[in-house]
Image (tube, rainbow, N blue to C red; front, top):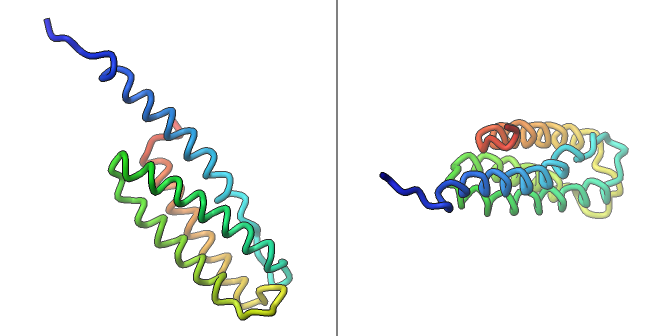
Length: 125
């Protein structure tokens, strides 16, 4: 009779529980990123961007543990968003119309690749 260790039986459940906890906590930062307009306070955009950065970092660590290459898509999308936010000229209180369009586009791309990673990790199961 073949013996199966308790760890072998529990490991997938532990991974799934960890996935759900990390992804769900991080997902809120992605979903709560504000709908940016030319009048949105730049301080609110930067604060949301910091939350997203923390979420991406958390998931990067987890994704490496389970060998998920799609995290590079999330990282790239976040870096594009971060660069757009960071490239807004200093001294401004709002992003302005053209920057807000790019921020919205970058945030949407991040949401799309995030959802693909989330689905790929089967956290929603």
